[in-house]
Length: 457
Image 1 (cartoon, rainbow, N blue to C red):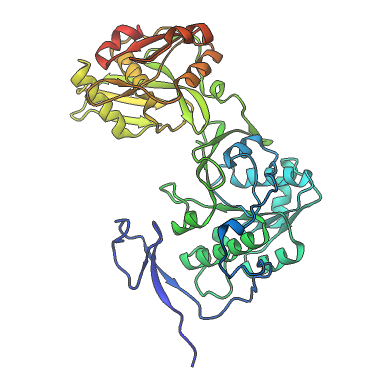
Image 2 (image 1 turned 120 degrees about the vertical axis):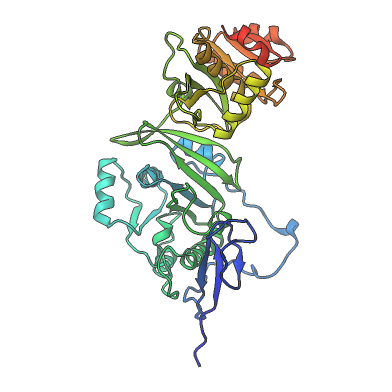
């Protein structure tokens, strides 16, 4: 008698299993995210060759010898920065991003540079034919005799080829197209993504092969498929950027081999992606005559400091409900700062439309730009520009007080390198005269938003 397939239900948001379908996930609270998962009673033909002897037996951790092999470089300094210093043997890396943003371009350029450095690379193409990949490679001037391509979507076939050719780095484009022949569900389903990823992860950890998986994203910006995919991999990279802008950002939201939150900045052109070393100059679009409603603030992105330009437009509302539009920050954060400005700063902006934007399309989450946001709003409200070469640093509390933020000396140093000569900072900062001596930047202390207007003009 044939054994039936086991059916369960998995939340695509958090990965929680359920015995039956239900509308709401009890674990993460989301609605309509539970999908059917059908397992297979058949056993995989993949034998898992390459398992370390005795790997199925426990042993004291002090007896486990850590690998002394150093990381090796990818050929992109920006990518090495995001990964924590380079590639680690057995790393399992997931790269997600919007369609057409440049994921395949970056991976093909990365594969070419690794192959040029005599690394054996295999590019698994599940979406394009070898001819299409070759056309892109010629346009990007990618080369390397040790770079090979495998047009396949079967995980069993891919693992068999890997066992035979033993590449050092494998790039899978994309994980949503890979499927197991032993499952009845279609490629891209919860069952297929879980099974295919699990088999490749097992191969990576037992052989030391480095895997790069390209993943599609949903309309909400999350990687398509179950949330468990992000939990299974070692590193999760998100490709960010607006098609209307030249720049692209790769952000590490998870990294087991280095700090998370690091970013890499690239510039997109006809010849592919090129690294941007001085990102602050890239995001500062206007350094001429001061503009009304414009302020500048240094922000931390991982270990990197970027000097960004913040823009605000305050205009009398002609409708019953004033508009609040924010690009680059959380819209609720903008509403909070407007309430603080009205309550503690004396600026009654309740009947005005407020539009806010971070130049260049960058998204900033840290609160150190609060003071700069308030300065740009005040500037637009009173129709007067800020002083030339003046920046702002500080977090604003609900009581209107300006709070200190981390890494202020490093931020001041970056401002000095960009030519700024004055900065408004939280009250109580020590060694102000030393900053003037070391960086030629004058620091003006601000205790609360009530005093801000007297300091920025």
